[in-house]
Image (cartoon, rainbow, N blue to C red):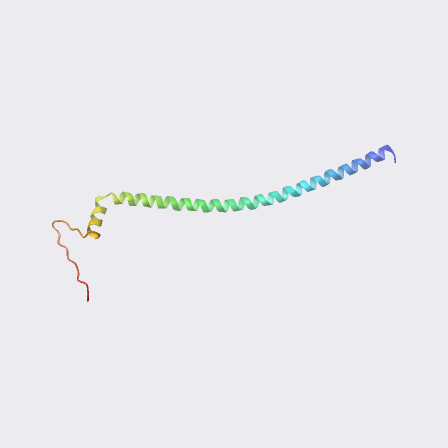
Length: 101
């Protein structure tokens, strides 16, 4: 074998090594890309669920703020005094129904 022929054989082997290496790298990248897409989809679903929880928590917070504001009014105090404590104003008469026996 001549020198040129040996160099060509070495060059062809080197090219095949590079091609195989490139194919393996592309395969690994394709698998990683697929896994990243699955992870990304799962994270998007989780993000939507967390956004829903945030909205629910904000709505609950607003409701509690409104309830707190209402509980600080005279109207609420009067309601509680009438319903739970059975209190009446000075000029009112309280009638209670008898229990049926």
